[in-house]
Amino acid sequence: MPITIRRATINDMLAMQNANLTNLPENYTLKYYMYHLLSWPEASFVATTTDVDAANEVIDGVQKDHASESATTTSQSSENVFQDDIHGNECTIKLDAQYVNKGEKVIGYVLAKMNDDPDAADQTLNGHITSLSVMRTYRRMGVAEKLMRQALFALAEVFQAEYVSLHVRQSNQAALHLYRDTLEFEVLEIERGYYLDGEDAYSMKKVLDVVKMLPSKFQKTDVEDDCESDLLQEITERAMSSGKLI
Ligand SMILES: CC(C)(COP(=O)(O)OP(=O)(O)OC[C@H]1O[C@@H](n2cnc3c(N)ncnc32)[C@H](O)[C@@H]1OP(=O)(O)O)[C@@H](O)C(=O)NCCC(=O)NCCS
Image (tube, rainbow, N blue to C red; front, side, top):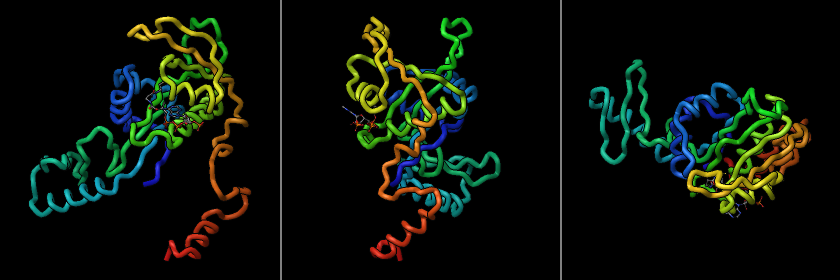
C-alpha cells in the first residue's frame, strides 16, 4: 500500500510514542509529545500506510457486532477489535498502538520543535529535531528523508527558523548517513557522554533556505510538473493505455 506523509496531530501521539519505544532508547512522556504538537503543530509529521486486512477486519467487526447487538466492548480474540459506542457512533479500532484510524497505521514519525529557551545565548530563530524513527519493515525506502524534508521546510517556512540542530549517536551509521550525506547537515562538534549510557553524540546543524528546501524539489517522479498540465489526467491516460485501469 502507498505511504502517506502528513502532519502529525494529537490523535497520532500514542502511535508516535509506540514507534519511538520500538525504535529508540531515548523515550519521552506523552506530555512531551503534546507539548510539541500543541506548541508547533505544523512542525511534526507522521508516515502512515493503510493495512487493507486490518480495515476489512474492522468492517467484519462492525457487522458481527450488529448481528449480535453486543454490548460496548466486544473481544474478538486474536483480532483485538473492539467497539466503542460511547458517543453513539459505530466506531471500531484495532487494539494495536500502531493504528490511528481504521486500517491506518503509523510507520514513522519526525518530532520537531523550535528552540524556545529564553536564556539561550543564541537568540536566532532556530529549530530542533527531537526524534525521528521509521519502523524496521519500512526502512531504506526514503521515508525518513521525506519526513525530515517536510519538517525542515515547515520549520523554515512557518516558524522562520534560520537553522535546525539535532544530536545523533556516534554509532548510528544509518542516521548519520541520512543527516550528513543525504540532508547535508554539518557536524558542529562531538558532545562527550551526551547520552544516558555514556555514548558520545555528534551535534549537527543545517542552515535552512526555504526555496532550496521546497519538498517538491525532492520528489522523484517520472512525470514533470510544469504547474499547468493536469497530472492526474496524464497518469490516468497512461494507466488506461497500458490496460492497468479499466
Ligand atoms: C535512521 C532511520 C530513521 C533511517 O530511516 P529510513 O527510512 O530507512 O531512511 P531513508 O530510507 O530515508 O534513507 C536515507 C538515506 O540514509 C541511508 N541509509 C538508511 N539506512 C541506512 C543504513 N542502515 N546504513 C547506511 N545508510 C543508510 C539511505 O541509503 C539513504 O541514503 P541515500 O540518500 O544516499 O540513498 C531508521 O534507520 C531508524 O528509524 N532507525 C532507528 C531510529 C533512529 O536511529 N533514529 C534516528 C535517531 S537520531
